[in-house]
Length: 177
Length: 107
Image 1 (cartoon, each protein chain N blue to C red):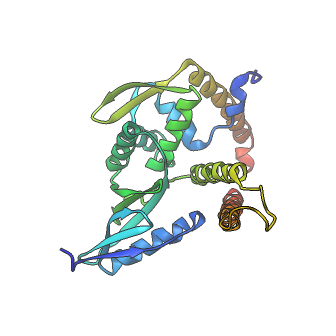
Image 2 (image 1 turned 30 degrees about the vertical axis):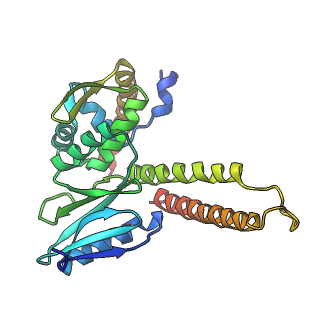
């Protein structure tokens, strides 16, 4: 069991989801099929015959009862549900003739997916501003770790800002299509 | 003729328009996908991601409503508001089609 599975930790930015799909597809071509996903950014691959599998990622957060309806809909359309990793939903289908290989069939719904991610990013971006420890920027503040917390918060905030900018550009790029 | 609050939903995307057209009767997701492909003569195919997104949005806006749930498949149907939106969309398309037909011999 253990020898024919491998674990990989891999990070991807939300505007790179199509590259991620392509990478998972290339893994399957080499005989490594995605078996499960988990935190933090962990993929578990199982060894098998090389196959033409296409992978697709959706981004959804919902209560559990809606999740069943959601998964059923994809199953009916011929997609295997692999799992969820921080709201990313992973689906797979074997490439066959006359089988639709897209889960999003128009630009508008692709944009809507990125906007769902964007809403999440904006939410935390605002939260970080609200909780940002502004007091005591001066060096004579009472706690030695205060500065470290400030720097840490600032780095996370900049990280979210970067994500928001890149994702907004990706949406704009799609709108031009 | 188009100056009511349904205006903000228009124009509908081609997928959304077809999804709403099928929901004149209660249907679950996969049945909608099949029906759209059939009535559009294969010109429009709706993937599950696109369909789920449309269901969520249309339900939130009160244009469709859940009527039945069996085996984890939920069926939806148009609400009166949804019918009104669809009606206005059809009128827009009719105008466009007439314009198209009037020049079709010159194309």
